[in-house]
Each structure stands twice: as structure tokens, then as C-alpha cells.
Length: 118
Image (cartoon, rainbow, N blue to C red):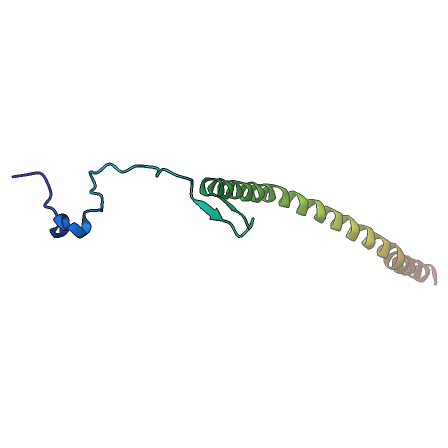
């Protein structure tokens, strides 16, 4: 009994001789210039390695921006809400002095006059 798996039917077919077997050693990097990629963003050709590095940096920058926004936006919202609350408070106090206090004062004076009148 052998431990080897049977070879596929086309293993000795000349048409498939150029395909590497799983046990063949294949060169990791081909000789010659690095592949060139044209990027739509920059509109220029650049080596594939540089394009990959730029893509990594882009991903890193996007993550840092997202993290920064997640940290800063809540603080900015609370700051703006504090400003809105102060404006509303100031407007409410102004309206109270202009409208409610005169009505309350008039009501108090009317009740005191009714009590003092026999």
C-alpha cells in the first residue's frame, strides 16, 4: 500500500506540462521591472508596490480620521448644546422679565387691593 495519491488522468498530458505541480519550487518574484499600475486618483503610472503602500496609507488615514471623529464629535456636540442651552436660558429670562413678571405683579397688586377693600 502506498501513501501517495493517484495522479490525475491528465498528469502526463503534454498540454499540461507547463503547469507546476504542488511539489515544484516556483520563483517567488519574477525578474525584471516591477509591475506598473495607473491610478485614477493620481492619474499617473506608479510601481505596484508604491500603489499598494499608498492604499495601505489611505486605509490607515481613513481609520485615524474615523477614530478622531468618534472622539471629537461627542465633545463638539455637547459644547454646542451648552451654547444652545445658554441662549435659550437668556431668551427665556428676557421674555419672563418682559411678559410674565408684569402680569404676576399686576395679579399680586389686584389681590392685595381686593383684600384691602371693605
